[in-house]
Image 1: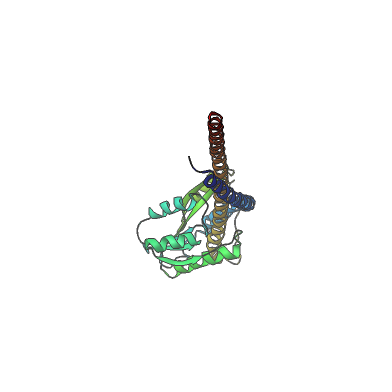
Image 2: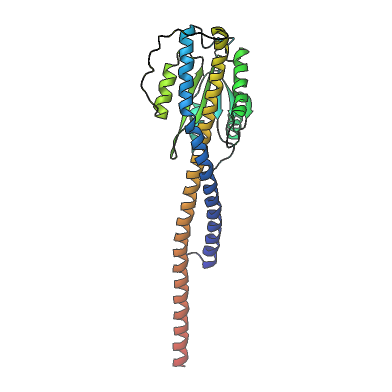
Length: 296
């Protein structure tokens, strides 16, 4: 059995660590609630924007992709990876990178978060740029990422734009997801995916037989709407990724705090046993000494 001093020192160290993890749990819980609200509040808008873009594309008969790609036949893929800047968020990044390693072919990456940037550097994959986001991403922040991707597409460097991120499902579940944003000739599958994942109203849109008039022109709208769609979609993905990060971190810190409490309880029991054993030994020694004096 370990000495009492060693056990006391371990208890003290674990209690100190437990206080830190508990404080981090509270901070992450506070950030998690705000991030979850931000992610959930924009989901209906994301689906509506996809619906509008699809309707306009059908009505105008113009390609959704010409506004973005100067070389749509380019075999190179551009994947935007949303990871975290810091650790202590359980298996969130590990699961994301497992999905990343399954991506094959001519792939170029844009990273959002230090963890992805370091992983790609270690594994020797081509990284075009690295970005960082705060705890509450703004549209102006995520627009810079989208515009960089759009420029790479416009310059003919890539033939598709995809996003790899941790989809927020609930506090306990975050799913690594690879979604293709462009080229996209038919948005129906994307709209259905949004409605299924976000549990939105799945009823089909009512038919509208009215004649649409586009100002300043259908071509001018289709030159800008797909770009706006991509920027706004990327923004909602960033909000989802942040909700996943804060949820995973809160759960991880709660698990660490609970484990610290369990270890303290187990060590306290061990300490009490060691103390009882020491007291019993001392009593026996005193009794033996007293008996020896009586015999003398």
